Image (cartoon, rainbow, N blue to C red; front, side, top):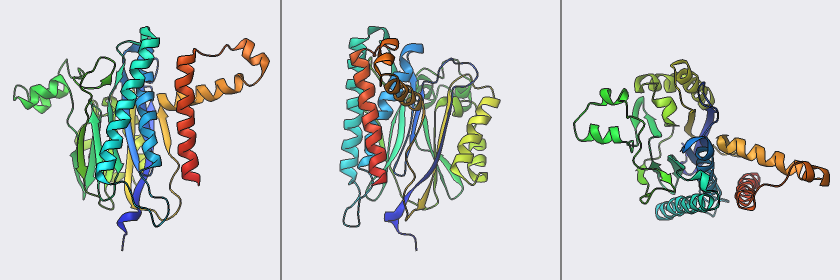
Length: 318
């Protein structure tokens, strides 16, 4: 018999810059107990920074959302709620601090959609127009509602859901995490823990060009989460998506051995690699002369990000 306490995510993640954009402003995190996608906005200068900040702050949940040892229990629902809200608030403060020190980044923001394992339920959190889907016993359900101008038109009955897919203002978001937002309270919801469920989180670069019926078919046909994530992104690109494309797919499975290491994708992965390269370059006096250090404020953020991610991996490996 499957033990609920051993149910975790078996996951795959993929992020692609796409065929039009110069940079990838999407970020993603997939782990055994936390999944999320953040779709940055604010032009070439800021979207990747905003999504990286959000992903980094929420990645700290991976350290506390899983039990360590038989005597320990998972997060209570109330603790999970508070930690999600606190992490989002910290991301908001970090965005404000960076914009204060680098005014050229003003106007940056990010969507944020994800799910975290709590004691006896999954807790989802949502800001913007990235989406969370659940495949349960063959039925695909969109678990989040887009925070967009067009969704408001649908809700008021002024246009149909089909008309919304091709509406010229379908990408106008009305609620995100950014320096221009006053209300960044996420939608929170509770999802039952069921073995063999499959979750799918994506940026609008994917769900904007791949319809729900096709998403369901791919999620049913592809055995591994990684294969499903790759196929969904590839199809979005083949269908002509003009945006960055990011997909996270995870199965709820009983895992009694060591969990998978967390995986970052998109802008966060690139930022980590760039920072690691920079640390190597700054490792000698000669490199310091050829490669001046970054501004203290920005370097401080990426140093914190690196320490956070290192602690995540160390926690898993212990």
